[in-house]
Image (cartoon, rainbow, N blue to C red; front, side, top):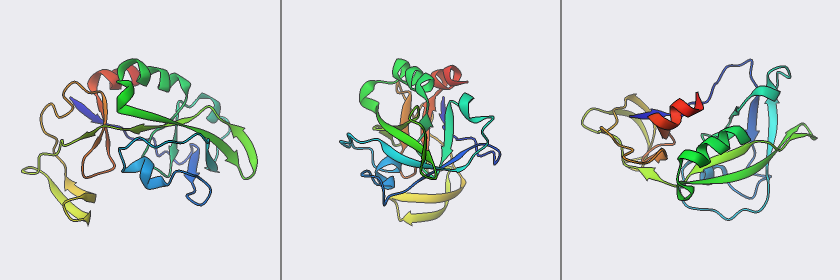
Length: 172
C-alpha cells in the first residue's frame, strides 16, 4: 500500500520559508526534479512562524516546499528502509530573521519517480503543463501496488511523495 507524505500544516507549529534568491538549489529542483543535484552548501531557511515550546521536539517542519524537511531521527529511519539511490539529503541552516537557530534538519528529496496514477479513476482539475504536471485534482486514484518494492518516491505528474506502508508505520 502507498501513502502520501503530508506535512502537518497546524498554524500553531513552526513554518519555514525557502528563498530561491539565497540558495544555490532552486525550489523546483527539490520539488519536481528527481535527478541528483550536486550541492556542497547548506540551504538557507527562514522561520516565518514560530512556537518555541514545540520546536525542539519536532521531527519534521512544515515548509514552503513539498519536500520533507526532517531531523536526524527521521533521516536515520529513512536510511534504514529506503535504498540510498532513491533519495538525496540536503543539509540546511534555519534562521529567525538573521539569527541562526539550528542545522539539525535536512530536506529528503526523492530520486525515484513512480508512474502510479490510475487515470481511468482519476479526475484532474488543473494541469499546470498538460499531461506533464498537475496542480489540483477532484479525485486521485493510485494503481494497486504502485510502489512495488520501493519505500519512498515522487508520484509522476505531481509534487506528491509516496511512502510504503512499512516506512509509514516506522515513522508514526
